[in-house]
Amino acid sequence: MFFERPESGEKAILVHMDMADEAVQESPRELEELALSAGADPVEILMGSRHKPTSKFFVGSGKLDELRQLVQLHEAEVVIFNHPLSPAQERNIEREIKCRVLDRTGLILDIFAQRARTHEGKLQVELAQLEHVSTRLVRGWTHLERQKGGIGLRGPGESQLETDRRLLRARIKAINARLEKVRKQREQGRRSRQRAEVPTVSLVGYTNAGKSTLFNRITDADVYAADQLFATLDPTLRRIELEDVGPAILADTVGFIRHLPHKLVESFRATLQETTDATLLLHVVDAYDEERQGHMDEVEHVLREIGAEDVPLLQVFNKIDQMPGQEPRIDRDDQGMPTRVWLSAQSGAGVELLLQAVNEALSDDVFHDTIKLTPREGQLRSQLYAQGAVLEESYDECGDIHLEIRLQRKDLLQILSRLGMPTEQYRVEPVY
Image (cartoon, rainbow, N blue to C red; front, side, top):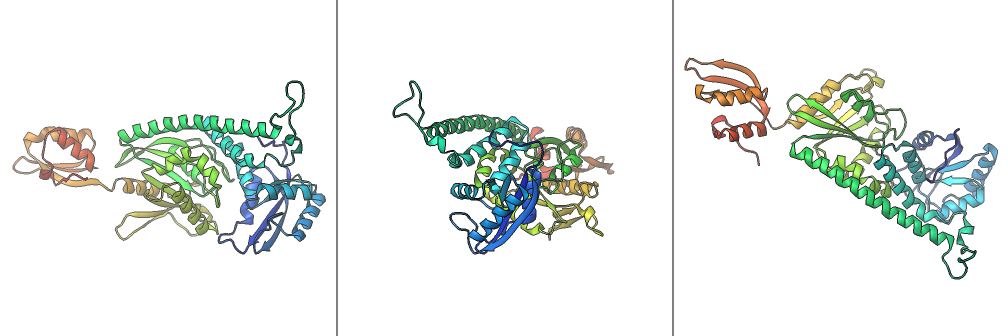
């Protein structure tokens, strides 16, 4: 709605400044990847350092002159800053360099606008765009300050700018109402899965970590996967079968990024709900990336921001095919529970180890033991066979049946309750 994209890539000048008062610095390489993902053609990057940004132009007068010269030299069509800019800063810079200016938030929004495929995704992107643009309506549009003229419109009416703002507020209200309807539909789906006790496994991670490739590898789906930032925007759900758990839902979600705009997180809260309501999170990490730890910290920050920090998490170190000598493996904690899986989603190496680890993480309440049944308890025996829980069967000299069984403890408790049999006899205690 707000971004017109030409067929060929626009020539872009990138601007990155190291700020001394910023605890976490942005990455110039990430800015270049973002620009390429948006379809821009980065022709040069202007770098520098400052203690803090100036209120008028963000950069100093010297850098502003350099930027003006680079725009003229390359005949650039857009200048992209690797930082959030205020509406006044954008307006002032554009006036000085005679070129369109975009900040980091605007760039991410443009990528999201290109990637959205579903009705919900498009609504969320439009909402984020409208809220971002609402503070920038005045930029360069001085004619909008004038009041409407013409027959029936003269006199103390509202200015064109006020009209646009009113229409903008009405559109934001309408989108929020439609998104609320989508949220309720999603909530119904989640409640039905919870009633059926189907666990949800959600893939999370920094953008371009390989989540969609891994999702396709596990589910044989055909989700769009590419070596670019934000290739996936809309959540995709698929049913998978796990050995001890049975059916489960695997969810592929939008990738996170450093300094993800707060309004964007708010707009995508319905999508991110698949993360907060998950039974288990698979944190997919690009193990080959030199900024691996910083990306992991950023994902954990976003998980805290959306209220998902207490959801059990299993790390998945992906792209080991790019690391010579690195073999697929499972790292475990002191209790023997899996904490990290090393694999390659591209080649498939180690994916079976991931399924094993997910199985263990979700089936930590599995009952695996040998129970003794009398001949009169054949009904329990048939129920256990119907569940596929019997691993081995033998008889003793008294005619009693010894069954080695493995199944979820809750399923065994349900069978015993249905048959009116005591749990203590089989060393199964209810879990509250």
